[in-house]
Amino acid sequence: MAKLQLFFQSLFVILAVLFYLSHADVGTAAQYKTPYLPTACYENDASQFPSSNLFASAGEGIWDNGAACGRQYLVRCISAAQPRTCKPGQTIQIKIVDRALTSVSRPSRNGATMVLSTTAFGMIANPSASFINIEFQQ
Image (cartoon, rainbow, N blue to C red; front, side, top):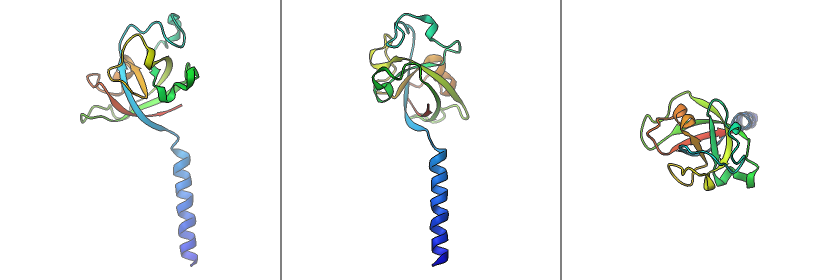
């Protein structure tokens, strides 16, 4: 009985640690090209874009009625329809500057969690892909 109780306590601790360490969400990402202005967040202000060009439009799931503007996310590619699309070990930090639903430039695929700039998309995946599965964390 004591061994069984120790087993369940250990299992609980392991699961609690795993839950604590995994704060990321899973979603999808598409890409979009210029023109990027105007945006839903900052209109025609070109200074909204990070100098790294690592930015994105928020899909409806994270748009949060505009509260997503300016949020920063760590993003990595976890899979895609085509094998070897993701660039292993690559994680980027992006800034939300627009709403995907209303962006001037149309995404490579509708319904994505976020639509990455071509630079951002190319940092984590083969740019010829139109859609990838991502892990992201604010």
